[in-house]
Length: 390
Image (cartoon, rainbow, N blue to C red):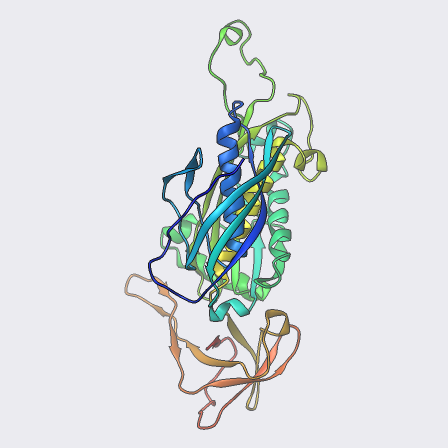
C-alpha cells in the first residue's frame, strides 16, 4: 500500500538537502476505528521524519485516504515532504504501528543556537484531580510521567543538558504568573540558579479520568457497572520557563485517550512495565515522545545564555561549558541585570547590553572562562550578569 503526497510549505528558495527517512509512528485504536488510527500513526511518523530532517514541527496536516484535508502545519525550517510510502503496519495491544519511508527536501542552513545544548531542569508535575487515580491506584502517575519526560530529554544530548529532576512540586502554581504575581517569577529565577539551568519545565496532569459510557440497560439495573476496557483520558499541560527572567515562553497542551485494560480492582504501579506496556501506557509514551520532539524544536534554535558565576580580575567564569558544545573562540556579549518595578508594584526583567565582546579562553565540562577583547571596559561586570552567545 502506497500513499503519495506533496506538501508545499514555503515559497522562498533556500539552500536545501534531500534525503529519504524511515520512521515508525503509532496511534491508539479507539472504537475499533483502524483507518483513523492508521492516519494518525502516519502523521506521527511524518512528524518524526520532519524533525530528523531539521524542521521544527508542532503539528502535521490531517490526512484522509491519502489526501490532505486540513493544513495545520507549524514549522520553522523550510521543508517539503515530497513523497511518503507506508511500508508495513502491525497491530498490538489496541495500537497500530506503521513503518513509513518519506522523501524530504529540507533547509540545512540551521541556526546559530542549534550548535549548543541548553541547560534544562524539570519540576515534578502536579495533578489537578488526583482522585482520577483511584482506578488502578495510580496516584504516583505525576512522578512517573515527570521522570519519563526527564529521561527522554536527557537522551537528546545535542539539544539539552538535563541538570535536575526536582521530585517535589514545590508549590509552583503557573496561574500566579497570569495573575501578575511577581514573586512567582522570582521563584522560577531562584530555581534556575539552584539547578544551574536556563530553562525550567513544569507541567500539570489535567485529566486522567475514565470516560463514562453512555447510560444503558445495565446502568439502570446495576448502577456503577464496570465496562470492560473503558477509555481513559490523558491530558497534559506543559509550561516552559526562561529561568533567567522567570518569564513563561510557551505552554503546549496535549490531549489523548486509550483503553484501560486492567481490571476494576487492579492495583497498577505507574512505574512498572505492566503499566507502560499496556494500551494506556503506550499512549502516554507516545504523548511524551511528541512533547520531547516539540520541546526540542521549540528550544534548539534559541541562543544559549550563561550566568557570570565568578569574577577573577579579567577572567569571568560562566556556567556553560563543553557539555553545552562551547569551544575556545566562541564570543559572548554581556547583559547587565537591570530589573525594575513599575508603578503598580510589578517587577519586570530588563537587561542592558554592555559595549564590547568577550571571548572564550578556557573550557571545562560544566563551565568556561571568558575574557574581554581589546578596548572593552569590563570593570562593572558582576556575578549574575548574563553572557549571551553572539
